[in-house]
Image (cartoon, rainbow, N blue to C red; front, side, top):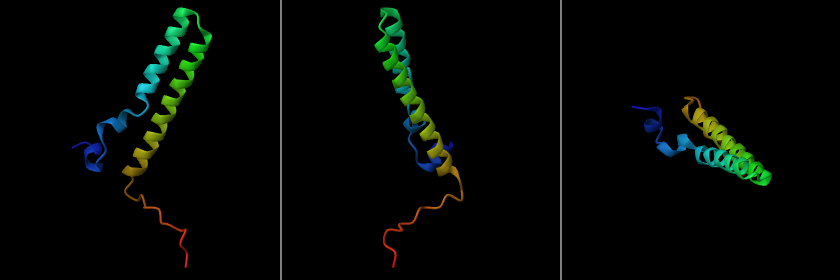
Amino acid sequence: MSQRRRTGESEESGMAGMKERMAGRFMQWEGKATGDPIRRTEGKLVEAFGRLKQTIGKIGRRRAARPDAAVPTDRSRRA
């Protein structure tokens, strides 16, 4: 049984950011083919956002997989 199934994660969470990365690459290609520098820059930004989403997803999965991952306590109601 995979780690995702044990933790209850969906298969899509492993692909976080992949759509943005692919769309960004396509936008860069489109801008290069048409000679549009704004479209290329927009593609670079979308791809960077996808990489950020992937990195955040990896960090979250690592934290969830740790056996000593403690649930944060709510400290807003201190007595």
